[in-house]
Image (cartoon, rainbow, N blue to C red; front, side, top):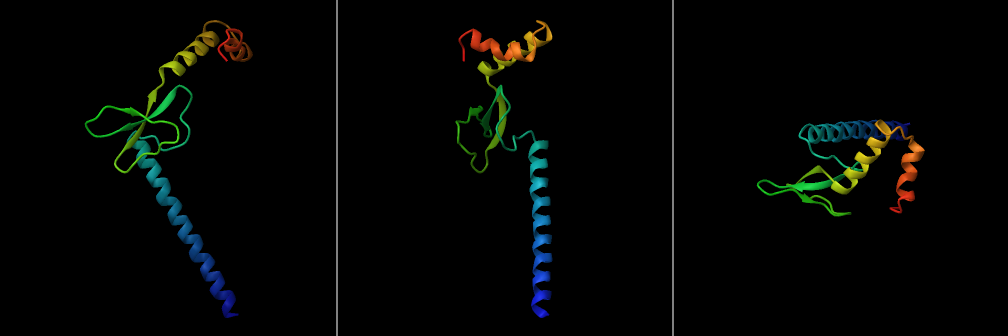
Amino acid sequence: MTGHLVKTLKRALAHEFSHKLSQLVRRGYHTHAALGHWSGGTPPYGYRRAIARAGEPLVALGAGRWKARGERVLLIVDSVEAAIVREMHEGYAHGGLGVLAIAQRPHRAGQS
C-alpha cells in the first residue's frame, strides 16, 4: 500500500514540475517575440536569420549556426528569395495565374 502512495505522489510531483516548466518556456517565447526576436524554427521563405549585437551591424547566420549568449536572432529579407516571392505574388494578384501555373513557372524558365 505504501508503495502505491509513494508512486502516486511522485507522479503528481512530476506532473506539477512539467506543468511549471512548460509555463516558464512559454513565457520565455512570448518575451522574445515581444522584443522582436526570432524564437526558432526555419524562417519563412524570403527571410534569413541574422545576429544582432549591440552597436554592430546585422550579420546573416549560416545554416546550422546557433546563437551565442548575448546575441539576438532577428529575421532579415533575403533579396533573391524576396524577388521570387514578389514575382509569384504579382503573377497571382495581377497576372491572373493560378497556383499550378506559378509553381511551373521556374521550371519553364530553366531556373529549377
